[in-house]
Amino acid sequence: MKKISARLLKNSGYKAGSLVIYFILICVSFVYMEPVFRVISKTFMSAADVIDPAVEWLPRASSTENLRIAARVLNLQKSLVNSLWFSALLAGAQTIVSALTGYALSRYEFKFKRFWFMMILLAFIVPLPVLMVPRLMMFITFQEATGIKMIGTALPQVAMALMGQGVYSTVLILIFNNFFNMIPRVLDEAAMIDGASPIQVFYHVVVRLSLTTVLVVFLFSFVWNWNETYVTGTLVAGTIELLPAKLNLFDQQFESMVSSAGSAFRLNEAYKMAATLISILPLILLYLIVQKQFIQGIENTGITGE
Amino acid sequence: MKMRKKDAAFARRQNRMGYLFMAPWIIGFLLFTLFPFVATIGLSFTSVNSTIRGYEITFTGWENYITAFFKNVEFVPALGEFVMMIVPYTFMIVVVSFVVAYFLNRIKRGKAFFRTIFFLPVIIMSGPVMWQILDSQTVINGVAMPDEYTNLFLFNILESYSPAFSNMLSGVFRQLSTILWFTGIPIVLFINGMQKINPSMYEAARIDSANEWQILWKITMPQIRPIALISSIFAIAQLSTYNINTVYTLIRTATANMSNGLGYAATYAWIYSLVVLLMIGIAFVIFRAPRDKEVPLP
Image (cartoon, rainbow over all chains, first blue to last red; front, side, top):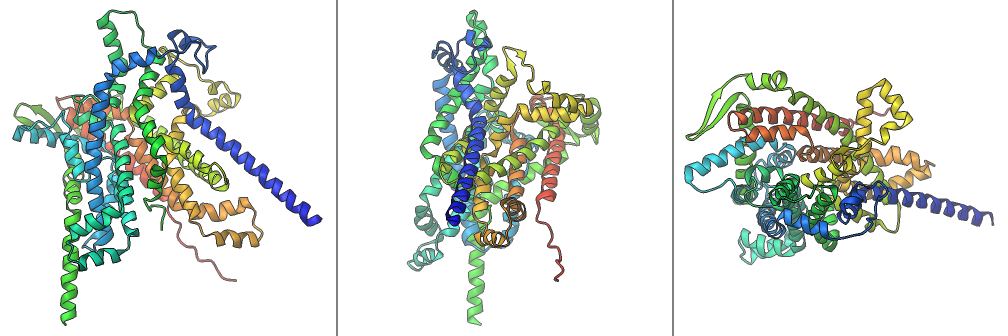
């Protein structure tokens, strides 16, 4: 009897404890999502609702008017298509190089391997501004020497991505390296005995076995390239209309469009939030489809120590 | 004898193939990372003029640094602001992600659901999005909102002791959501690390009648230290690439300015990077594994 009641007591204590934990987690989640909720709620507010202190979350009369106007200022159709191909192109380039580098680290014993591995890690913490001035000068010099237009095109970033210097390349290399380490070497050896060249082994054995990882890396790279604005802002400089860059300039562009149209519109939070929602919506949709793979991708970097 | 020759050939082959696969990265690293890094240090001592014939680079000594620190009235405050932002932010990011991961590790149901929420910001976060959201939080129709937190009694007390500290604290509170947005990846790393702690250690501690609190401090925390280091480095690296700080704006306007903008930009960028690397160094010293102390055996 005593034993049972003690167990009951312990159990209820555990339950109460986990209820508290759930409560805290829900509160934290709310703080997490608050900006997103606010963006969504403001998107559907009218100009009157925005300044009305009585309206906190739910708009009085919802309309999609804001979305329509924001889409026009963002030049949505064009900038969406541009953002898609731009990010996909860079992500493709980054994925290939990260796979090659991760493969080299996983399968070959070459001289100064530890040194290069350290360099890959160090490349992650070098702040970008310190690299951008010489990079910009290099590309401009190259452009003037050869006559190939570089600044204002995707070329400089494609070149950098193809040589492993894109956004967060280090993380992508680590994901690949760790996954390749899990593929048994016996498979490589079997293929080599059958006369496969190293590149054939890489492609037909290792890459074929890690197609999910390839997809995860591609998606991460896609998302990071989509969200990257500093390097893009310096090298593309607005020549290619991209969604995040347009969002950055939303305020000015809204004002100039309004003044050229001669109408009495005034910029308010609702328009800004509608534009923000539009620019994150493609990413949210993507995340909803493959959220599990994203989280597993980070778990598989192996930096938590195996 | 013959065997050794074969071994040497194998090692040579390994070396060659390794470098073949590494080649794109190594070339890119030398060209786009190492060279620019060194070049920026050099450029920070020069004046760069962009002309039709290309760049005219003249050596000016410490001129740019003097301008940055003594003549430009914006740079030093911006740098101070950056440091005042990054220190509490990093601290909050590491602490919050540890606490959230610890809780997530203890619940049975709904883990995947919460993880999905906490990871979402990693996907949607970008400079412009952050900027728009921060902007909408502090300003409504061009009128700055009064701060709800600073009216609290506690804040008034703090304010009278140290205005700078209370400023920093209210900044942390005001931008709590934004800070939380940087915890997505650290949370996943922490959870992953916690799951790898050997369960028999916990068991041993429980047999020695340690309570949960003691286990948290004596086992979980020391074991998780390397991940705290990675998380803090990640947080600093990420925070310093987001253009929500004013130093970034300064560097960008200087980069766009063609008459010796680039020289100044190089100087600013170099000082900025030194600060960032210093921060990472500090994080390293705080979180690195402590040296094994000699425990005298009884």
